[in-house]
Length: 308
Image (tube, rainbow, N blue to C red):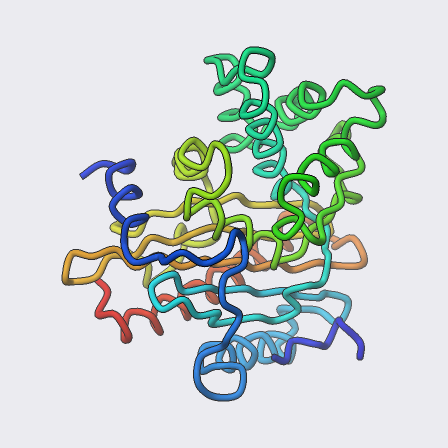
C-alpha cells in the first residue's frame, strides 16, 4: 500500500515530579501497552484518521506527504493513536534528545570521564531548548572516540546496545550539516513514544535531567498556537523542521479539575518528498496541522478526565 495515502488507521519541576508519581505502573522498559481504545483503531484514532484525510482533500496535506501519529495515555495505559507509527522518517532536530541520552549512558558508565558538568548542561540546553546544531555536533563528538566520521553511527550503536527495545528504528549516520539540512538521520514515531515512556518512568539514565531540559520553554507545535490547551498544561517536547519534515514529539502534562495530572504523549510527523516552493509557508501550515491534532486530542481527553 502506498504509504503516502496510508493514514488509516507550583513550579515546573514539582509538577513533573507529582505527575510522574501518578499510577504509571511497572511496565517493561520502553514498551507501553499497544492496545487501542474501544472501537476500530479507537475513537481518537478514527477522528485523527478522518481529520488527516480531510486535510488531504483540502490540499493542506499534499499527495507527496506522508504522516505518522502516536498518542499514548499514561493514566489508562492505552495507546490511543497509532498511525504509520513504525515507519522510519527523517528525524531532523527530534534526534537531539537521543544524542543527549547517549551522553547520559556514557556518564552513567564513567562519570569522571563523561561528567554532567555545567558546561555539558549548557551544551544540552543549547541543543534541546534552542536547537543549536553546533552544540549537537559537539555532543556527538564527545560521546564517541571513534574516527570523526564514524561517531554518529557509534552513537546509534551505543543507544541500541543499552536499550535496543526502545531505539528500534533509529538511524544516526550524520552530524547536522552546515545550514541545518539534515535529511539522513531517521527515527519512527514509535521510537519517540518508547523513549518518552521510558524517560517519564525514570527508566533511562538522566531521566530527571531530560525531563527538565525538554520542559524548558521553547517554540512548540503541541500547545503554542492551539485553541484548547490551557497554560496549565506542561509540555516536554522537541520539534523537528527541515524543507522535507515538520514534526513534534513530546509529553503533555494536563491538569484535571480534581487537581491531578493526566500525562500523555503527542507525536506528529509530516514528511514531504519534494522541497516546497515556500519553506516558511509550508512549515507554518504543517505545524498548524499538528496543532489541530493536538487540540483534537486534548478535547477528547478533557471529556474523559474532566480536564481544566
